Image (cartoon, rainbow, N blue to C red; front, side, top):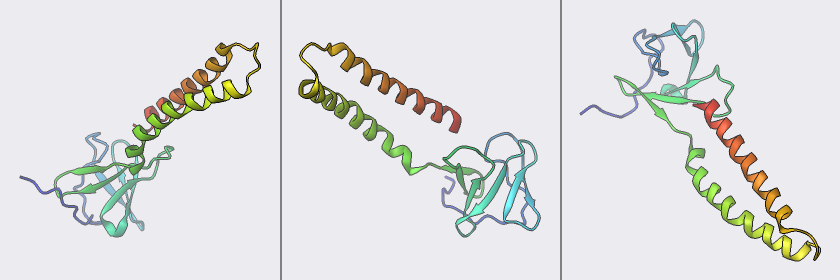
Length: 139
């Protein structure tokens, strides 16, 4: 069984495969603590005392990071992804309660509930679309 323990990244080694699975190899960039892939042209910086490799040439707010086990790169997942489900459930449960409370407290007697239901539904769809676009871009 192979070890999943992180090993220190040697800046002088030339035998690291690209963590992006593009079949490329990492080449050290002179005078820096960084590597460049010879195939996909992505740049990676060595972080956290030489144990973590982080992709620098990305426009995503969520930086992709990996650690080296001696044979392969293991992705380090962002802690923010752990909170997506609880926050999503909170929004889905709390938002209708707040909107219905506002409807019964502030709505004039002649107004339609359809307007009060349509607005939060469109906001939820907009939030879902934004989340999908961010997830699609970061993966």
